[in-house]
Length: 392
Image (cartoon, rainbow, N blue to C red; front, side):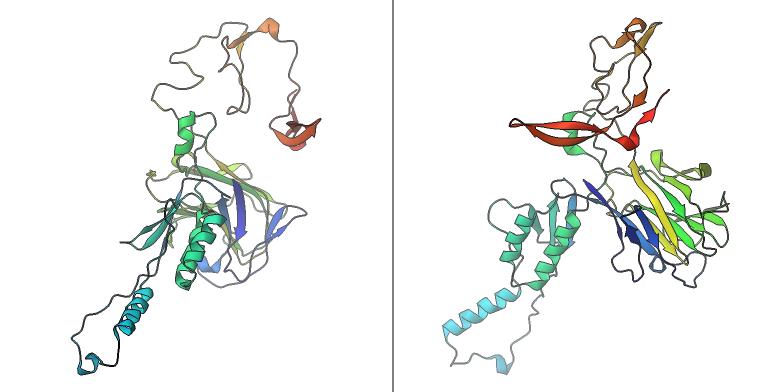
């Protein structure tokens, strides 16, 4: 999975990314609008959950429907011409049929399906370059079909964020569900007196906008495209010139906003989400207007879900309470999805006299570096220096 933050392509004034300090910057752009302008007045930075291949998500695009023939009674000019041969008539039929030629699919198995009633192309997962070229060659004489096929390929790479978890049973990996319990955090730096910055969560049928208005010194929550906020609070800090931490979460179907580690919006209840609802291909967007903004340490999180094939039966767990006696320790690794710890051991507890010292540092998760030695290939685990921290 390759997560991507991209500026909205059609925007005239856009965000720019600096490789040197890994920061997104939006230049000053002045507009005059009411307190909640339309979406088109913001320059948007959009998140995409991009897959190079695979996946089981559904993508659909519409094809231009063929024109229907209208039956009319023949006029005198339409009477048969004795100079026209049967071969000419047959050629005319073929030419007329070509004008309504359906989208062509190769014989045999093909990942792309054509719904002839709705006239739509559908695919589960990513449309590979190989299949795209095969389908494009079959339909090369129809530019409108090639345009729809190109759109299908582009959109098929944008997958939902799922609850895939290596700790869950293997049979659930192919049945990962889209999740909308998400969180975004970043350092926001600005000295603008009148600018606005908006963080938008798209959930398919539901949209939530959190607007930071530096002119009124307020933060407001808007639902969908409503121009009336459902709640408004003052900004908890005055100075953003050196940067302030912004955290916005929809975990457990509650919207929570914190600025500079101060809770501003506390547990605003969100509507229940039906997993059958369509997902948004840009689940999070950040928009800016009327000022210069810099965003650093932009991070995106999802909530973790632990599921079982059968209710009550789970891996590496007990069906009843497990007692840990005095001077015994039930050891859990900090990377719970990958740790081989007390949950997996036949004798899960560690006696106190087995502990030889105190832990000093945490160095995992590490990075994997492929190496070769004497014709043997292996992965060398390299500690992530940025994440090493002292415990004592």
